[in-house]
Image (cartoon, rainbow, N blue to C red; front, side, top):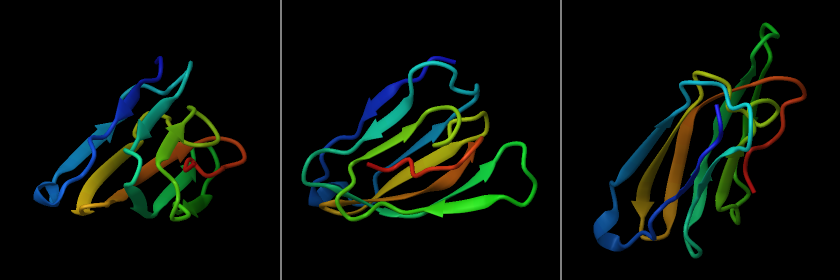
Length: 112
């Protein structure tokens, strides 16, 4: 239930197609689940997030073009059990992020 920090490797042209899949099997209850890209790489894509206990509540979050970090705190920014995120290297400087986040409360962007 304690969060973990992961740092992605810097992408080189030979790394295009590399991917990493992260699955949250136990809701984060302390610290955060955080994935950080290397400086010079950017995040692209979008992540939907559902409120864990509110029917029909889905929000979508996208990185702003400068974001390198995804942080799930176990509630408002995702990280409840069932959250999954995949990073795919699509160029020598870009990770496309896809997945599904489960959150709770007033949902907020996990990107920074």
